Length: 478
Image (cartoon, rainbow, N blue to C red; front, side, top):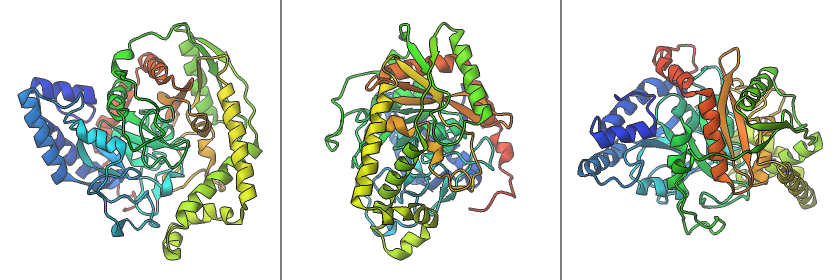
């Protein structure tokens, strides 16, 4: 085994343990790769080479002594712009934020746990304004691009996180998810992403009952290793679930006994699923049936009125954050400002009416799994769209979330696993949804799916071929 961009975190740690290579050598390789590729991808808005070197040197010393701090000691990772971290500016993807005038002396819970585990921070990754758009377009960071096709978006809001992992710039990282921001970019970038049950991973400030943080990685096993670390308790999050001493990596091999699975092709609102997406997911379902899994088709009928209420609610949430800043800064985030403007005309009664509708949707969503152990459906109903677009055409900026946001409302664990490619070579994700708090079961079924489709070879081939794409004069300068 030698240093390369397709190594998983597990493989890196094995190299550290055997002395085949050190965390410093791994870091040097990835920093050079970032220098070559990221000017095109734009997945990092900040790299912290000096800090990373100090962390890698300390880790190398621990490995030489045989005293690693954790299963991921020395493994390089990144920090999403949405997560606060000591010494790094956080903009939440927007020019509206006055990060240049703030002090950054607090680690978010997940960042604190990774620091305690001895992981190496390469820098911070991009996201769209306030994390509410399903693209890598940001008024602050510019356009982040999909490694599979540089003309396409990696998805949002964990845009830089997903793109950097798929491109082999780091093996795993933490994403955040309020309407689908882990699963959607995982789907678009052909990697694995896991949204935990609400409260499973401590979050501070817990400013929404549907906001979570979770692992994104090149493999289910790597995500499980990271989950071991970030699910550790943090007293700042009073809403967190009681901590359970679970080794997620050790339960992956345990079988899911005769699971009952419901297959949802279409949730009933928003645009119709892209034929290639639904065809690929349907084919994946048949392949899973061939392994003996019991899968039953499930008809669902949410409405356009449901979707409009959800979009108005999230517009109001975004607007409430946006109006904290001066008017000139608000205007600089033009897409966000225009999209959320409708909220200015809402009354408190309007907002509460939409909130109640979301609560009804939450109950209906939770009821979908009543006769099942899992639900499966496309992670996103369309493949990756244009890189310079904030969302789907004709103002359909919220529509990419239709297959994911409901399961944030219901607080259920959900993952996205690669299951195929479009004819144009864009990844398609299969979403697995579990019962509330059954995070372990979602990991187990996700591992089964990974083993069935053997996706890593496809991802590694794309990653290995990326250096040939670095000369791209047509790519917009960022």
